[in-house]
Image (cartoon, rainbow, N blue to C red; front, side, top):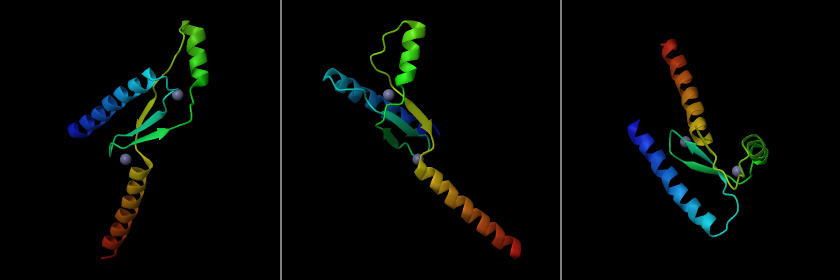
Length: 100
Ligand SMILES: [Zn+2]
Ligand SMILES: [Zn+2]
């Protein structure tokens, strides 16, 4: 578990650095990230989903938002599929053992 956390931290750190570089070159809003806590994969969401949230922050906290970062931590579709398949296998082997 410790090594898994380290992997995620390393990816986040590397990503933060490259994002900072991109912003300096005048790039637009950087995409959002989905970080899998199981395999460490980082998927990207190109679509910006936070326009409304920025407006709320600007209104409520009188803070001019220039950019934001959004990272979702969870389990990616590949790991979910893996779990689903494992679940099936478990059920099948359970059924087999109960027959014996
Ligand atoms: Zn995964
Ligand atoms: Zn965004």
